[in-house]
Image (cartoon, rainbow, N blue to C red; front, top):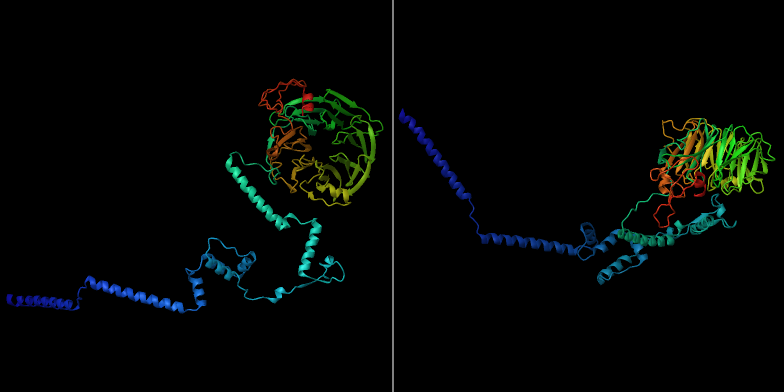
Length: 603
């Protein structure tokens, strides 16, 4: 048993040895002999020679290619080393750039070589690919067409060439414009561009030499949102007991006047913080209908609601002068009136269309004028040469003050019943407010020439009768209001004829029923008198920023600013501390003045 088992094990060992021997012989047959370093170097040299020969054949084939093929290859795969970069760019630019370069002329740089310049000349002097004969032929235009008949100088001129028609249109345009406009004069525009570029470079140099605040505000009032601040009421130290019918700023001093049905006229100093009271006068049994400062600021004229007389308060003398009756004046009541800007006349608006012109010096009647219908409002022009009278029937009469004659009459467009009228301080605009709430804005030039002028803007933001309109001194804002509805005040931006959206404040009752409005002399403050006896005060930051008198809003030095200088109050004999005129001295000078003298003589 053991002999039989050992025989197969010996056979398996012999077979494994035979397989290993056969594998070794096969590996010996397939193995390649190892190459030496010299043999490898020779193989590399042969490969390099073959590559050089291939390149030579390729270059030779390229040299046989046509010129068109070479140019195409250069454009697609890049320019050859013989061409300059600028020459290739000109070729790619096309025939239009080449033609433009012909007109300008060829300018050779000193740094370019002679060969490059000659190549550029040859390139730029190429002839165009084709010439269109239709472009050279002059097109004939029919002048008998209805749009071109006015350009014909004679009946025989029925046709014109395009060039002649263009010249004719240029002549017509220049005649209409009074010459060549600056924007159409190309030569002057080029010169101005050169000069402006030179000046800009100078400004840049100057900017780099110094430091400082270079941010400035625009002089024009922006539209849309008005920067404003709500100040304490102007009469917060003495509210009126009833309706406040008048609020007006002094023409030259830092004072505001209020008057109402409580029979009192009050003066307040305007500072936007305390607004202290200066003085109040009481007119017994005389409810005030209207009160106004005289143009010199020395007097206050006040009329009553049911009286034939009126009062004159002389602020210099501190006396109240009643004017019981004007000789030659047959009126039951004297209520509405206007004062001329030059301080010479007082216009009383009577009943049945009568207008009475009085002298401000003597308070005597000069002349009487009459309009057709009932006059509801009147206004003087800024030069006091004309009077605009607005009737209940919607007609506007223009009177010459010297001759007292009507020089023109026109109808307010769409007016049902005239209510109020105002003229801007620069005599550019006139505003008419009617019972429908529409305020028509006209130019004074159109009002003087046309019988039915078209308004430049119809302001329809009021839903009740427009009872008060006024312009600010710079003619940038028009204030319109109605006394028949709460918060019925709108401020119109005149350059754009749009309404400021942030006044009055939305969903906040503050103004109530507007009775009177006025702007300060520099438009820094705006005051509204309401039926609650308050003179609301607002400061316009948008206007104050561009004003040279931002602190006081008046063309005088700041007077009695409470948080800077002490005040002693004793009724009319108020003591003030003023600043001396700016003459290089920094020492403050104390002067004692009465309230009346201060606000009328030191402006």
